[in-house]
Image 1 (cartoon, rainbow, N blue to C red):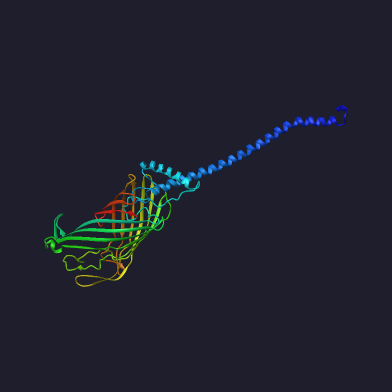
Image 2: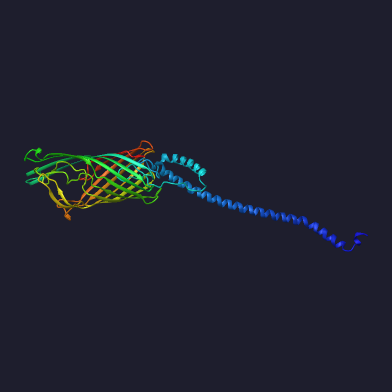
Length: 434
């Protein structure tokens, strides 16, 4: 039977032909949809990768900054007085950058990506001209610092007792007295770092002093009648100090360091030495031997600020020394013991400031000014009759040279700017890190 005569065949054939015509288009559309989905997923994955890379770039930038800061401090943390970590000289910047790149590559191999390396945020060091050091001793490290200090002072006093008829013509007595004083102080200082921000220090000095005085009244005897020559040598006052760095600091950010110093009276005090009161012309007499200590316990808090400002470091500090009162003091004299009662030295307000510059990787130079205002001494609760406030001002220059990775040579010289300050002070230090 012919196909066209079979019932329903015509409709089925039409449906089959239509399905065959539509199938290629549907398949093509389905394939396109699948491809679009794959592309969309790939775009989303790439977007996630881009975000991750952005985070890694930011983390690496932060790590790079941390490395540079750490290298700036670490390069000089083990050498006192050889320059500045966060404010290096221009010639050292290229070397520091190259070393930083090598350090970063090693750290990327050893540490997970984006992890900041450990850094040492201890304060910067400068050529020391004051008692307060800049860089604190690293944790677990010991620094020994032998030092030798020489100071010289001289004073001339001319007292006129009488009256004048015309200028430059004196009728009466002229008292002339000249005093020369030499002081040598050898000290050993030990510093130990309990943490990277806290250190303790002990200082043991040995003092030698010699005083020479010549005086006489014009036309009233020879100079030898009131001349004396005295000296003394012994251990000085032992000091204990603690220092703590309050913040991290950094480039164009100040460092703040607090300290507390305790001064003993282990030295030979002024009341233990004998005073000769039989010398004519000297109301209080003269000491036959010289003391090597102050005779009073003292406590001195201080705050130090260091501010890196390329290519220099600015620094300064403020302090106050409080001396504890002593009761029942007796002075030894050639005429027997003399009761003085209770005595308390005046408080000492001090401040200093200066600037340090790195000359190269081994040497640095500092200049500064130090001032102390010494209050009146009190005797039996009242200001002593002959006590006055004393102003001490000193201009200081310092130079530092790094001998090797463990030793540094520091030299400073001070010139007295006020009458009561020593004329010249020369100090040599050799800190050694163990």
